[in-house]
Image (cartoon, rainbow, N blue to C red):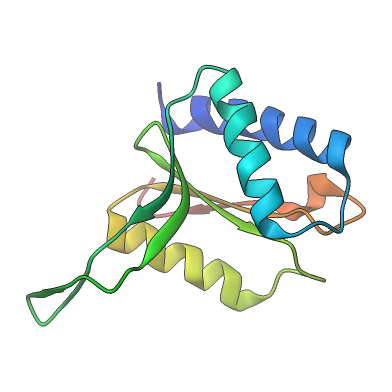
Length: 125
């Protein structure tokens, strides 16, 4: 499956979770329910994926984690904040670079319109 095909299924799952739960819950609740929904849709999902940081050709294991990794290709970064800020996009882009992944999806569940709160971030896609 390509990143774009995975993205299509992920978006469907995000809509399902949002439509059933609504806004205003903790990020961890959305994360657990979204993982369940993704798995129910046949996707291979990992959560809290440890990611080493390399600096000056040295590996640092700093307990840095990706929220959700789908099919070993797409990074999901979940938020439950008043509004997405520029730093959230930069944060996801950094995750993509460090993990050598091409596509990330930034999701803010604390919104009145989920369509406007799902953002794609690409790294050489």
